[in-house]
Image (cartoon, rainbow, N blue to C red):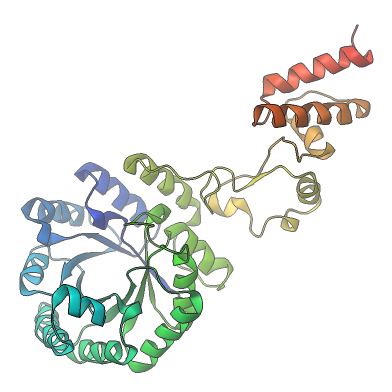
Length: 372
């Protein structure tokens, strides 16, 4: 089984200014992300100019543009000379009946006409199956067969409302994989908090590509997070996306800053506290062997573990904290300091600062007679 290919769509929402978009695109490409879905040409001339400027950067990543499966959106896409044209159409009956008011036969006709025209352009072509997770599987397979017959290379399975779980995702992608010989891309939304799990399940079932966003940004609850998929593929699936994991934190912080959407402290992979340990049992175990309480080395991300002093800390954490400050502590003070640290953390709801630690030590040395 080949390694999954990341197609990052952080830039598609079009909210970033031109300069910011270029910076994000360069950072993603430099980190080894092989495909970037960068924008929607049908938004107008200004957006086309933005796409063309990104293209002029001559990035290593292939550039994809997004459009609806219409003649007009195809024409706008062709103005950008992208590497990949992605054209999307709804395939669920609920969308066809209540949004588009069209029969299934209309979808197949659109696929035959517009996808065939797109293929003639010489670009790589992808068909987006919107709301595929709520579509009739037999109809979705029929759409995919038409896509293949027209000469397109890929179909994107979109869980548009994030309604799937990993088990149903696996089954749906496996059926699609059996039906056609196409690249299959999974586009998972996070409405139920399952976008990453569903994406990994899809890749196990035969999907070749994964749609992601940095920090899981996206409409409503967002999409599968780039950093989570890259690390999940590496550590759960034992495969490699080719993305430089040491660049994930800096890219996350870049997007956090320019998007104005802060990353939670406990956000997996890139959160500030995910390698911070407080529990005395944990820190004791880490001192003996890091694998006791870390499933992978933070150095893979260019990060370091840290020990946080709090109400769950143990004596080993106290020793390490004062050693780091270059302050020798006698054994008879360790438990007294631990009691003081736990009280401080409970009362102030935060770890003591270096100044606090120095003050605790001086006060206790006077109390026990180590200073006079």
